Image (cartoon, rainbow, N blue to C red; front, side, top):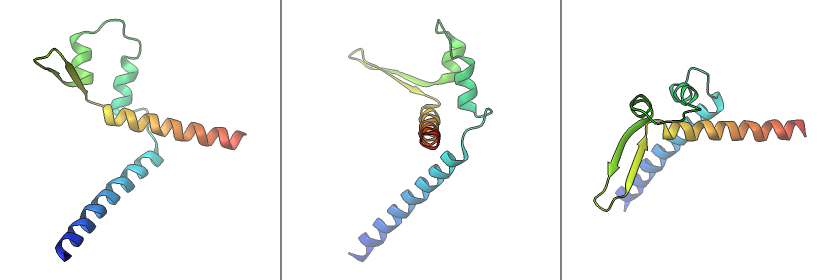
Length: 98
């Protein structure tokens, strides 16, 4: 039982450390040199998909036997973090202004 408790404590500590690091990263914001932001800004108004765009933005594409397709984007986590940062700061700015 003690071993289970120590394992759970270790797991929770690791998750807490990761979440604190993520929170600190969100607090620091995103600068204009962030690779994900640079890539998305470069292709923000694309009208056609080509090899260059796929290579820069897509990690891999899986095509399954039943015809389903899944796409893993290179910057999916970073884009989520950027969106959260924008949402947090927009909400705070609105609260301060109001």
